[in-house]
Length: 622
Image (spheres, helix red, strand yellow):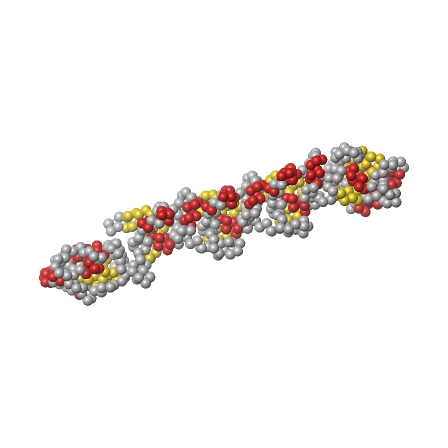
């Protein structure tokens, strides 16, 4: 080691051999006041070295640098900056150059050497770039400690200083609960103080302002806070940004409420009905499709999403999928995040128009799936039925499982059915019963298909009985597609036409045929032998039998007193004059007995007619 006096003497002797090497190494500036002619660069210093850095590059731990000191080869050498930011140089010892530019580091070293030399000649250049060690926290998919390389891996072999976006992408991207407007870069200063730089990446996303993408330094901490207010439009745009969580990343979500198959699902964008990995976004609609679609009781105007932030707080917000289907508002079909819980509530009131429209959307339950429904009340054959889109019994193709199709399967409505007060009783996912009122009369009058709603699995369809039958409406109802094509009526009594031909006790008649037309069609009326007084015997659905004596007016219109409408399986007994009444009637009934399923029913009829000993009959007449 030189003594101070010797070093100064040597420096004085070589004063005229000052070099511009420091100017070359640090981009054309030198802090020392250099005077005298300039010598050529010593051969030991390479003229073309890599990587190249800018004037603003700041040194950090891990960097390898070359310090050239023209006072002698023994003062020059290669150094790697230690984790504490220092290098050790001859004579002056440890020098902390962390966070300094090349120019600042050169100035500092020259200042230290002025204790030994009057005019120190020092230059520094980069040999290799060390990595940055940073910490990420907050609303990032994988927050933690990361080491970021600063070497440019391209053919240019320069330096690539990591930026805020590099750190965010390395951490898996910002979550959908992150606030991109208030990102903090926390930086420790040489004085020990902490500098906080607030960055608005939303501004970067919208305007491309690169100043928001700050360069990082070793030891920086990046914090992404939680967003308290949810803006659906911004969240959708954020979700597809390059610094968000990779859109192709599988995410596990739960979906509950009014869907076919509630539960947990893994969603990864694309058309979930074909291939989960195909192009597309992992949205609420994709999640609903995975769960088999919404039920007909769903309220899609208030779909709720519960999301847990990285801090453990819960964020709850709503989306309106009805606006998506009506107006094409894509923001309502928000992108889901790992751990989201999607709740589909039950509609408090039934909107038939919305129900029918939603039943034919991509999130509806598959309409081609068979569904079992119960049809009760004033239909020909009450009971459970399986509705299919292709049903050979209905002779229809690709139809919808609607109310009228269920009624058709049940044999059609009876003439006394009250079409205005039809009810659908439906159990919701919560176990409550939802009542949906349907007006089939409006369907007949206006053709509005919203009054023929689609039925769901387990629905009960109730067709009530009308107290007063309007003859005009009855004729219109008889022609409806959900009325039976024909009804069976039995007419017994005196045959007419040809005395050698027996009467036709079993008739296939159009629905809502009045009694007068049935008698005339049967040939069981003879002006000479039969009177206008008939007995109408009705087999009720509860197993009882009712009887009514009528004076038929063949000239009157439909009315309950003299010319009522008939129902399926009604029996008309035409009264006869004179002594032939009992004999002929018994003979006619005997001929019709095989047409009546149960002998007990026949005995009831004969008892009413007084042909056998009276028996008791229970139950009201329909």
